[in-house]
Image (cartoon, rainbow, N blue to C red; front, side):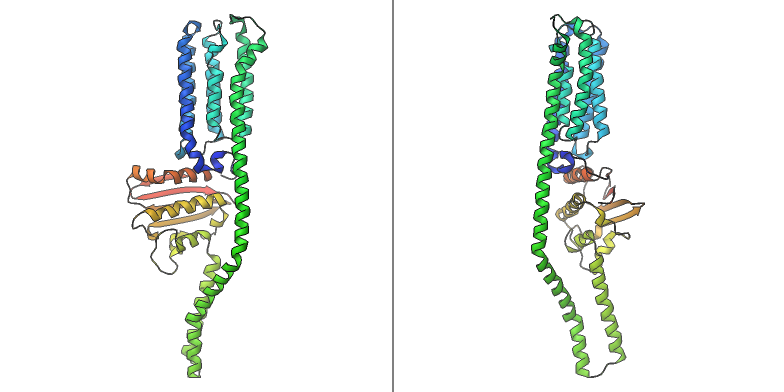
Length: 387
């Protein structure tokens, strides 16, 4: 995954998780409505095979959307949208073929309405421009189908009137879904921009305090190791070979600590300072995190936040320590790959229930996330490009 799409699901994966029941309800309602209208207008069906095929295709399109909107399968991709869109459009064609030559009333055609409802269900998951453009193109197809059916209508009238009557419900629902998607995405982007400005201002305010804290840490090291050494040398009045060796040892240890502090990534700092419960020993974060190419900093802010939240969730697991956690990063031709493994005391259903929200967010920011749980080891594999 390279660039986040302008969808509510990818910009606000946690908030969009609650939209799945609504999408499922809309898809189920569309299928029930189509079934009811088919039974109601049996007298207008001249080819029952096509009528049944139309319902089957609509059911497949609805099932694709229902499966795709579940948080465990996030994000809903363009390919999934196109597949559901094409199958739903094929259902409309089959419905028209099932009533071809005998379609007396356009108001009994369920195709345009159910098609629009499916697009509404897709609103939180796809960009507004994509929903609107696909809807307009499909409206043209529906208009052509309606034009071919005009001679069979019992009510005389101009073809354009019937076309408008058929296309308007679908276009209204489609453009409403696109407008709503655009409005929500724009609102999220404004909030993110304001949050970023606030974060930058906060960093500026805290910079002095952070610098003072770092200085105090360095002074603590000097007070603990360097000053006692110099005090001892001054008290003796001579410098021995043992003192020289001790001075080299202190200098090397201080240099090592300072280099490690400079080179430490945000992920190592998280593991070291409180992401999970730990056993206090020097350099433990380096044992947990293997990042020889220093690719962890290449994550986007959203990706870092998702990983941080996932790791912090381990603090709720009784007796979990960072010794049960391993994080490995590799770099292959600019493609960053990560593997996280953890030992968890859960059965499969309990693990997936406990971490389902975190998997949903991770899938939204890492499109190719793979989750594998063979008790007691949980393994996550993902990849990303430069931020």
